[in-house]
Image 1 (tube, one colour):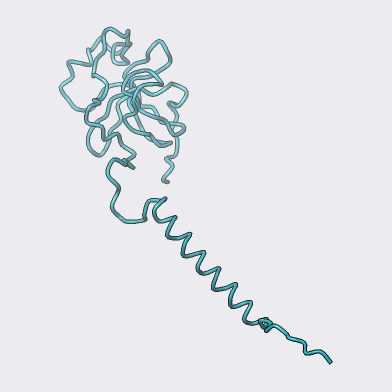
Image 2 (image 1 turned 180 degrees about the vertical axis):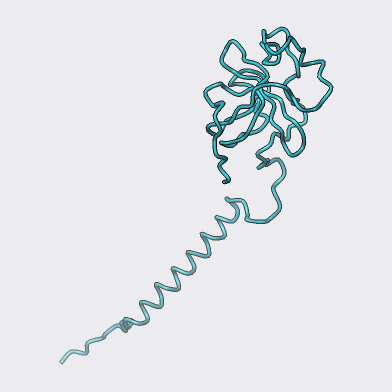
Length: 166
């Protein structure tokens, strides 16, 4: 009879343990790589990342209160010829309108213009006049004060719209 040399064979339990150890090692490597690739969930916002809904760019100002060169027809002109720029109170005169869908308040009456704020459905605005290209000059009463800008006419209605937060 020949002497058979047998190699020690790993038992089934030892093989499973080896696979689990290799799996845990691979997860640790993946987590270390991912930590460097993705931003952390810390409460501090990284420098240069702006997550605000409001436009916090200080270089951009809201649209001027009265634009004569653009051919704006003010809503207050029809009620006795009152000039909107001569109004002393902070509450603008004009038609009350409501935002139908999420819409941007633009600095100028142009879709490529910078956004001042994103208006939610149901927000009440005061229409100051309509431009030839379909944009309506509106004033929105924000918590920080009134914001004046332009919203495309299809996003506005004179009928009450229930706000998104109600």
